Amino acid sequence: MIIHELHGEKVLDSRGNWTVKAYINGTAGTAPSGASTGSHEARVMPADKSVSIINSKLQRLVGESFNQAEIDILLESIDGTERFEKIGGNTAIAVSFAHFNAIHKSNRIEKEIFPYPLGNIFGGGVHGGSSTFQEFLSIPVKAKTIYEALETNAQLHQRLREELKKKTKIVGINDEGALTADIDDLKALDIITGIAEDLGCRIGLDIAASEFFKDGKYIYRSSKKALAPKDQLDFIIEIAEKYKLIYIEDPFEENDFENTAELTKKIGDKCLISGDDLFVTNEKRLLKGIKTGTANSIIIKPNQAGTISMAHDTISLAKKHDYIPVISHRSAETCDSTISRLAVLWGAPIIKAGVIDMRISKLNELIHLWNIAEDPRMAKLGF
Image (cartoon, rainbow, N blue to C red; front, side, top):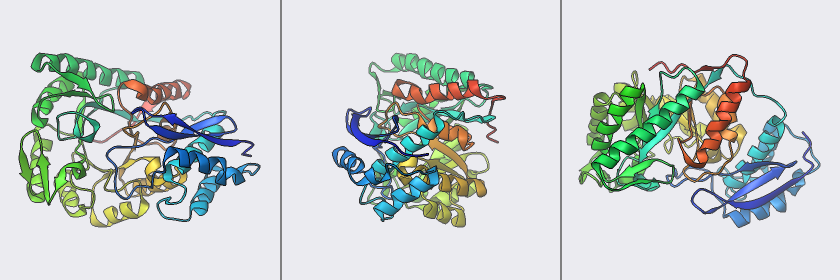
């Protein structure tokens, strides 16, 4: 595709902060950002600087023709560092998204297999809320269509709101549209599990353990306990078995491959152990996980890598070694729905894209893709 026009502008994200939006031939791509971020992610430039880079340094792309791999490789080359230290991963992913969307706006993405929506129902951590665990997640495993799956997660969200109102006076919404309330982690699991079982859902957790790992211990603010890594391992195994968890993300701090591997060894046959801050959509870190038997699933966030092609290389490596890929949004989002098209195009069995608020743009895009597919069906998880 020939790039006839490229420009950037700053726009607001869901937190009211500035992010960067790139346009290629009139089609947009927007960079998200996260609050719970891995230290090995691609660097994020200030929005003003990112826009300036697009509107000056990257104008060399105009008039040239690229496929997706070519433009992404050129962005890496222009930057010249491993983590986009010079132009910013947010700059690169906005341009990469815009190019992908410009190509595919006239090309239908038709796939048989559709991802299950992994919905954030209740939360806390750095996303806002009283719980130490960052996300309490739902996978509607009995759903046969994308409509049933999205409706089930929405029903769980609504029923949980009503149940929480009976337990506590203050029920709120955090950065990701998840419910919050002044109850501890285990009480939240008790309530959510009961509703989920009735609706045919399985429950998961994004523990985001790096965010509460201090001085060698995991500090649980709601229960006032501090766990050493081995005690954390025992605790996670205990709750995984008690609540029949199907998914656990970042159960240890971001560099603890050893304990994550041990957890995988003990319960990985009946639960997805997923790396987010652990792997940061990075081939080298995933390869280390493969060699050490660490986790059996990986979060794929294209902006962690910096380009669509880099994220695709990571998801390809994951699939080759039977790691379940989970395409994911970020906590600071926009109405950009690129990840929905990527999830379907790449055949990811799970997409993490919220339940309510502006994240419905991604969910509604899944509905659109479902309706234009010839023979759509939900992915098989095997758990």
